[in-house]
Length: 292
Image 1 (cartoon, rainbow, N blue to C red):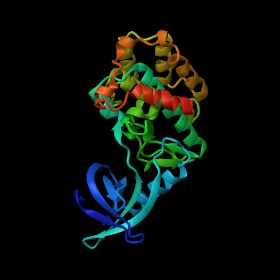
Image 2 (image 1 turned 90 degrees about the horizontal axis):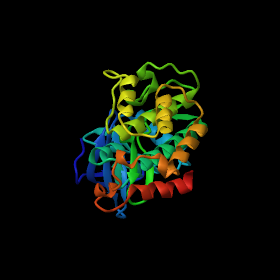
Image 3 (image 1 turned 120 degrees about the vertical axis):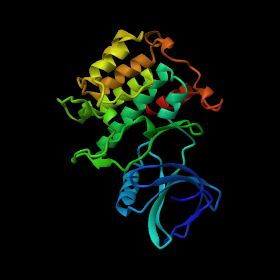
Image 4 (image 1 turned 60 degrees about the horizontal axis):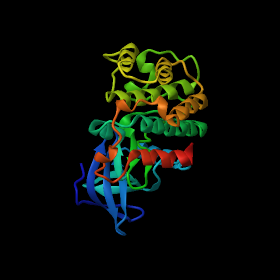
């Protein structure tokens, strides 16, 4: 839609942004890496759908107190070829999403646990603010190699917790697997995080259209995992867990008990993927120290 080298100038604020790279696109718009006139690199999301762009901008503002939500700065219009587009500016994340990382290398099991603890704690914080982050998936979780932080991206699907979820990825939605919720939204959050964990451990994303929870459990049983850890995962996948605090505590205990984790499930050097820039376990240790 827009090209590298094009300058997007806001109609109201008159700020200019030079497009450096296309980062992606979705159902409602495009995301670009841009540079402002002061040389600062930012992220820009643009669409002809004013309602969707405005909603996502406001959603991110609502969650600005959550540590894993990128900051947003301004929203404006851009007129191009007699057509008006709408965009907002946010932090640019120097890093990779979990799916990119997973396809390049195995992630150390302790790091997987640390990442999932952080994600669940912050999903709970978002819920306590009155909202549900509905579109959990590997692509929407990014690791910033410069700031050593984990971020959630794509807040277009953030909804008021009183309303039904409309936007989701079937793999990470408990309803897609035919499991009836016996408890509140906590069960759904734990399921989503369990499925993230399972995808990273098995290095595969499962589809409810062609597979079942039983198939996933059979794959997990082929690994030499600690029996208590395996039981936590399986119970979460079957929707049997609903206490997020207890679940997080159990994962923490596994993180800090080295003997319980089998190092054979993965390699340790994720910096092979980051070309020596970071070591993910360092990220987990730093963030866990701040957030756990």
